[in-house]
Length: 493
Ligand code: GLN
Image 1 (cartoon, protein in one colour):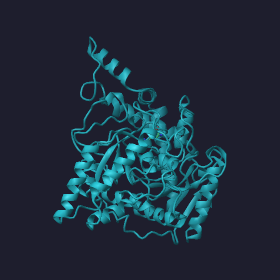
Image 2 (cartoon, rainbow, N blue to C red):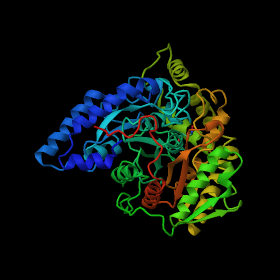
Image 3 (cartoon, rainbow, N blue to C red):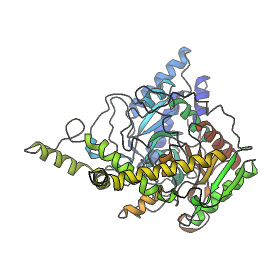
Image 4 (tube, rainbow, N blue to C red):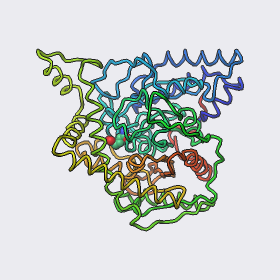
């Protein structure tokens, strides 16, 4: 597929009509989405109207921007004014966003064409996109497998070659893990670099919005556009950010740690095999890679319990606002308490209720110190261990996910097994570090034979440009990736 950078370059040069680009994306969506259910809605008319507007701007001689005419899909927990915003939940059915999220304003200012709302696990809670109240998205590599989650719709839309870029959100792995399972690139920025104004909140101390893309350079381009201080999100930092797109793509001389804790026996051996080959490739290109013996990341094995406690506590507070009064449908009963109970009891899904119960319990008087505070202490230990390692090394490398794309339904009745999907991605969220997943080939044998494997690279806080530059260098080394294998390399128009 033509990259976003190429589309924008050609639209800006007057060589490519954004309307034909959008029509191409809509045609692919129409052909492919009935099998994968990546989209909740295409918003086709709005997309075409917008593409016409970009075309008019370009014809008038105005610069239409760095994403001129690029079709971009958004996870349905990111607000677009006037458009439905469900977060994959019945409790927000028919709710329409009253304002644009900051990322949307930034994308539109650079000429992007918003195309569709992509499916997700309800309130971004899950690792397979099976928790959506509306549909289960499937993996474009094999429709009997999951695409990962919770940004599974965005990952599948890119992997199916419908759009070159989609946005997702990552609280514990929800951009990177589906990117890994679908064979695309997914980037979670440093905590505080991208505004969450207009993102449906789940775990506010953890999450970031970021791009999923077919090409690493597009992840860099979109990151440059969406990152930056925003007075509407006080967690965003005013720091100067070097352009990730312009930073030269190289790994020459970079010190890359490969901690043994990230390669342990819980990771599928055929996944490890691909990741080891990818790390060798980085070494061949001049990176100084070093296996770091067990001990430096001693607490990383506690990342899953710490993450699930902290994120559930934050979710129990963030989701308290959905009571049928201000957002979404209300299931009226005789008294107010009854209305609350009926609305929340019927319209939240099982996984969301599980998290609200867990979080409410862990925050309650008498249990707070034993659970929530303990989890915060573990989080601090994990963050300190990563920070210390990143004083000696520029990057940390390892697998993104312990598994490849697993069959639909495999972990449905086993929440704890599903939670283990986050073992390798939750640490970067707990520590606030930038982290990317890059496709690094297909598993050669075993349960994920023929399915994509993701290489994860983590960097120092606020060195997103360095992580993205290494990603672009890796992509060039790896050669034409096996991504989008189903649909070949057709152009976007
Ligand atoms: N799988 C994790 C969860 O269910 C991560 C979700 C996310 O990053 N939004 O909480």
